[in-house]
Amino acid sequence: MTAPSLKITFLGTGTSSGVPMIACTCEVCTSTNKKDTRLRSSILVQSKTTTIVVDSTPDFRYQMLREKIKKIDAVLFTHSHKDHVAGLDDIKAFNYFQKQSIPVYASALTQKALKSEFYYFFADKKYPGVPDITLHNIEDHTFFVGDIPVTPIQVWHLNMPVLGFRFGDFTYITDANRIDKKEKIKIKGTQLLVLNALRHTAHMSHFTLQEAIDIVHDLKVPKAYFTHISHQLGLYDLIDKTLPQGCALAYDGLTINF
Image (cartoon, rainbow, N blue to C red; front, side, top):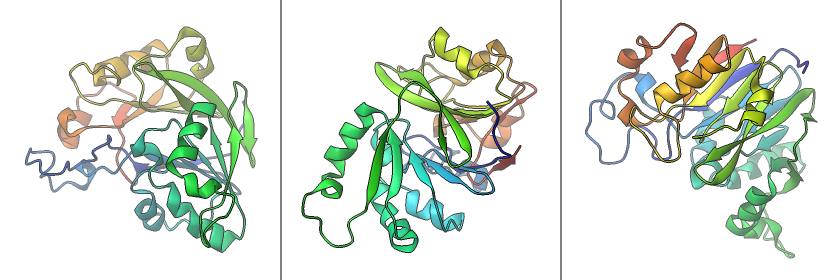
């Protein structure tokens, strides 16, 4: 799938609790290395004309301020867990300055959760200043947001279907512990893959670091970054240098152009 040149910004690379984790005194949570400080996982995908946010985390407001984002064209949701949707109320700032409803793309399951969580968005009589979004259903085919093609990839978060997204030669997958064979086919040919890697030990709904590495090798992806990282994985400087060629840990604020 042909796509324009893209800039990817990692808005957050942490798990649901973020790093440092509240009340934790481990060596990762007390590290002074900025690469060990992780907001909840989200990315920004930009072409010259289009800006997409994938997931609006509880840190969404700060992430937008940190990156000095003045305009967005759409929000894409991977799934409905709180660490991926909780910041959506802050979309109202973009409503105000762009003077329009913001398109939101999500599966039917995630839309149902959004309508419950943010019920006041959808009230017949809205309170002044309530966020204004337009929901679009994600189905099993490629669609465009501006000039950026988006191919949904269904993965599994234990028993919950979660969406990954392929943007041309770049694929982003978070909160997964299984990818079916037919969905892996959609990933093949990707030049850059981002994949969740929670920790070293097994987890019921997330890939371990080794499982993520194995998928990268199985799909023969030349470059990969790992995200949705917990404090249990270890210090950035120690873990990153152990990774095989072509693999690296992502960190908050990392930008990639391709």
